[in-house]
Amino acid sequence: MNKKLRNLLKTSLINGLLYAVIMACFDYSDGLDFRICRFLINAMVIGPITGLIIFYSIKKQGTQEKSNK
Image (cartoon, rainbow, N blue to C red):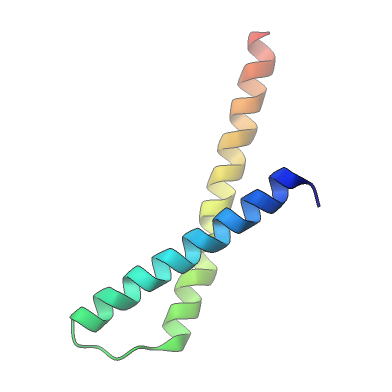
């Protein structure tokens, strides 16, 4: 695994977990109990989505730089 891919995976994992923690805090503030299934689903859905967004934006930025040279 190259360094860029490893950093992308780490960033996606951190983003997904951070989103899941924030959503769990909102649920707790609304008086709902902590649900591990909801936490994991939030982390596993948002993490890959942010990873794909970051991947395509980096890819698009790279192709734009190549076309400008």
